[in-house]
Image (cartoon, rainbow, N blue to C red; front, side, top):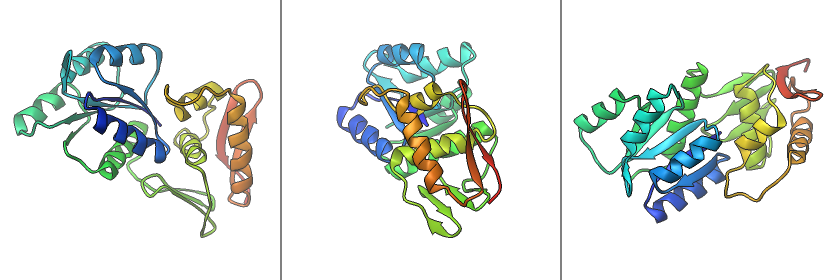
Length: 224
């Protein structure tokens, strides 16, 4: 999952970005509406976390722009304001969720995963494929009852493939989902390495990651 966080409180923004990164969520950071628009112009996001009060305007203005342009990315409004009217206003503009500061980062992660599942039409959290049980909120992957040891990027890659089960994802799309603008620049060969590691760790699970030469990868259920 790749998320854009639009928040001008530097300490909160950096802490949130770091926490999401440790949870396997690539997070780009914008501290103004102008920076947010620049990010959105060049990058697709699985979700936006949008503060309402920003130095150059209101986050609701950006939300309105996105919805008027037909953009359907899930948006979670993040604000210190707390009133029913504020919430109703945000939802009427097309917000998907609303979180009041101060907040627990675990709740933010859970809400992001929930929005992602709703967008994919999957109301459940835990996913079972073959002998694999994948839990995005608990950040666990279990094969035949045994937890497998995955790095945060391996876990994030597995999640992307599971959410798009049966569909082909290019190396470039997978790379975009794993790395934010602040990460060190890596090449698509890194995806090949992560896929090779995942295949070894998923051995015997009944889950296969197929390579479609020149196109990318697709996750399917095969023979255990």
